[in-house]
Length: 316
Image: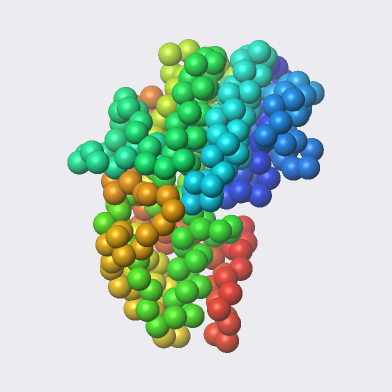
């Protein structure tokens, strides 16, 4: 691994985190983005072939199966994309002594713990998606090598399909929005996740352009915004931000409801809070409070026009 700049490969092109990584990582070297149609996550041979051709110094897996409810009907596909694919990527990264970075989820836990979850807590997923992500974490750890499994929660951003953009649109379309109020976690912006990832990689880069070995620092790190809120509280904060930005239109009323009044195919954990103490201790990184991140993201969001209800991607 040599040269003035790092050879970085991002797997995933259009996802929320992948899109932000494409704007944060170029400062550290040459970035190549791969995804469909040139590779297929469900076909290990296509992954191995692509990584061997590109031979990166840093391999970032920002692609995954994220349809939580749909996964209940597609367990094999979820496992292939969220467990088998990361394992193959970790194996290829270790073979060439590359740093491998991948992302995990708060859904690996059942949410019954009273305190925030740490990296040492054993996973006990409630749904297929969570089981596939936990299997991926375990597979990457079993491979070994220099790897970082960054576990995050409630990801949102100014573009893509996410809670922020959905609520922003529905607030102008409906008189009332019923939102679950007994699930608590940390809404985490894709911008902050990508920024923190870039900080870690930058801190590991030598002046020569080489990447330092992680050694005992390899493993799982929680990476979420500071603070916590319920989905209902998050929705309320989004509408408050819309008003603060001068939107004069009447907005929907947010109504708190228990999870039992909003049944979904996949059960969700009630407590999704994650402790970020390890990330700060090992890398000196702490993400912003979720309220600060939300305000910053709203500045990049194209709010609906006065005569429309659609929400467009924010510019940067």
